[in-house]
Amino acid sequence: MITTPIVNTQIFQKLKPVLTEAAELLKQAATTESPITIRNHGDCDGYCGGLAMEEALIQLSRGRSVNRISLRAPNYSIGEAASDIRGQRSPRYYGKKGIILLIDDGSTEGDVPGLDLLNIYGVPSIVVDHHPASQEGTRTVYINPYLVGGNGDFTAGMLGVELARMIYPILNVEHLPALSGVGDKVKGSDFEAYLSVAEKHGYTKDTLHKLYLSLDYLASFRREPTTVLRELLLGTKDKQERMIGLIFPIAHRLVEQRLAAVRRLANITEAKGRCVARLEINGFMDNNGFPAAGRSVGLLYEDLKDKEPIVLGVGGSLLIIRGRLPLTINKLVEELRLAFPDSQINGGGHEVAGTIWFIPADKPRIVGYVENLLGIPK
Ligand SMILES: [Mn+2]
Image (tube, rainbow, N blue to C red):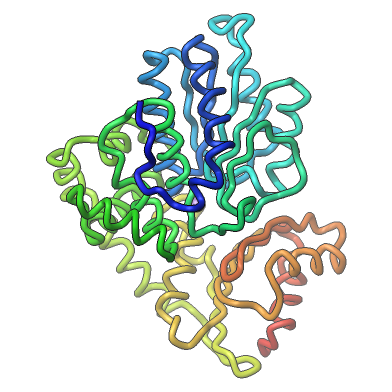
């Protein structure tokens, strides 16, 4: 059994009691072949934590316990919870009590109903997340750096990989915490420490970036590419290099093309002394495709970054925001709900990135409200 973490951070030390509690619950479930459902956010960070946990639990249960599904949107709704409860009630697990493990999700307002439904069914939930911690909702074990004075720079991938190693001595995962950090674009000394471990194992920042973009591309397909993704993250170096050689150039070209397109299509103005860019996202993509809408808006934001811009990606029923608003996105959601109580306003985010959903018919007034707030001329 591995007893020392990959990097012995303060966050790890402070979270050790809850990590240990989670490890014990999961070990118990895996060794008794009880159902364990892993739900990871379907992005790079979520997959790093989710695949490491899946690997450890597969090893421990000899493949008999684990079912992993990614979440497209980081939102554990009643629908997901109901589906997981049904999955765990299959005859194969007759009479056995299951566990749900959420990775890179489980802290938002949208997760509360799903978590509460699990509670009604007596299904324990373990939440491994690094989004601002929530006081609402029922979680059996809650692992979140915000609860011990940390923040989102300590990723779900870092937490998930360390937890996985407490469950089973899985190999070749030392680069995954750094990869998750590259994916989530985090900063800080913990990330730097994980980066140097990755480097020691032969993964430069450039390789990690190529892995990230390749993973991102694979994850953009509707059918979950589990087998190939596992190989990309956990496989031999030779296989990893060959896959990067195939996938990275394709993904990279699409990103370059998208960047050129958003530069051309964006409407860039100045409002209240700030650079504001507006991009109609329905115009250049459908529901699927690569890069995804949020990332496309992010590309434009990165491109204009020196100007400290606000970038708005306007879709049929959503508004993607990048950049520092005069108020937090969560506050903006509150304001919009007051102003338009029946428009089904949802969403949120962190300091410089967020998404707001609404009913399509109300797009003009919601977008108008936000533009007015920012002082964008009509
Ligand atoms: Mn994350």
